[in-house]
Length: 123
Image (cartoon, rainbow, N blue to C red):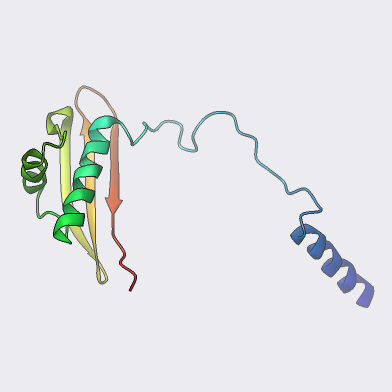
């Protein structure tokens, strides 16, 4: 029994030291959710950039998508909401954190998506 425990400990030590090759999954060139569209399309990225800029300046999230659009327009940021068939924005409370949630469907496309942003400040 002692020998079995010693062998198991030695095997675990060799794995930890990187002497044994770990099993790896092969990469076939497709994202994990291969049916999804890249979330960083320019229109989506512009929403994300505007939200981050708003949060950086105001230390909170905008109350509405219209407030975000006005903020972006004032600063000459490229935010074109007409590229979305639907654009739903809300701020959700998650404990003490405020989370900005953006759900969308691209105009003229079956592409749907969503993202959420939260900022943690560590003091």
